[in-house]
Amino acid sequence: MSDLEVGSALELLLHGEIVVEGRLVDASNATLFCEIGHGTMSGRCVYKPVAGERPLWDFPDGTLAGREVAAFAVSEATGWGIVPPTVLREGPFGPGMVQLWIDTVDDDAGTLVDVMAPAALPDTWLRVLDALGSDGEPVVLGHADDERLRRMTVLDVVLNNADRKGGHVLVEPGGAVHGVDHGVSFHAEPKLRTVLWGWAGEPLTLTEVTVLEALRDDLLGALGTTLVELVSRHEVLACRRRVDRLLHESRLPYPTEGWPAIPWPPF
Image: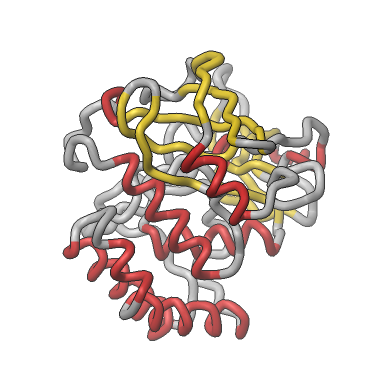
């Protein structure tokens, strides 16, 4: 993350003055890059106003910001720190999601998901999909066999994340791996869509089981109370069922039929 601890980052995000510096034009919803300052603390953040959310056919209007904050709450409950500090607050263009900006490395260490020629796939990577490139050449979508990514995979199953693209996986200079863009999560119907299918069908590790058992308890307590203020009660119940199913089956799921398994484009 940044040099700020999570508590300090949340204080900055909740109470800091937001100054919009520009817009991330590749995003489908209004996504603003901002400077933020509060007392002696300062930093950078992403601000997504609710007013800039693009209507979707399968998610209620005006709910994406709350889903981003709910994803942070679940991430924190796992102890994995995957989702950067995220809050819901008033901003220059009305209420919206404000998330700490993550600086990333720009070398090979920052590439954990990629599309490449089949022969170029590293031996330590997992193959997800064989396809054809823009000129009809064979390509493969793959990702690193990396514990940091695997934790993200487990979290995405719990969140029912419908948009885990390769570009949503961020690697900090210190090596921490974060996932961003969780606005289309928590739907009650199965909508998992991700580039991280390399572990499909593999048994859960003991650590993953321990984390999920604790998360199940949290969802029946304080975490569940927090989530019903951000997403619907029906969606919180569905989240609990997903955790129960993971623990019962004790393995990571395969893609379901009737829904695209991989977001396209994958980045």
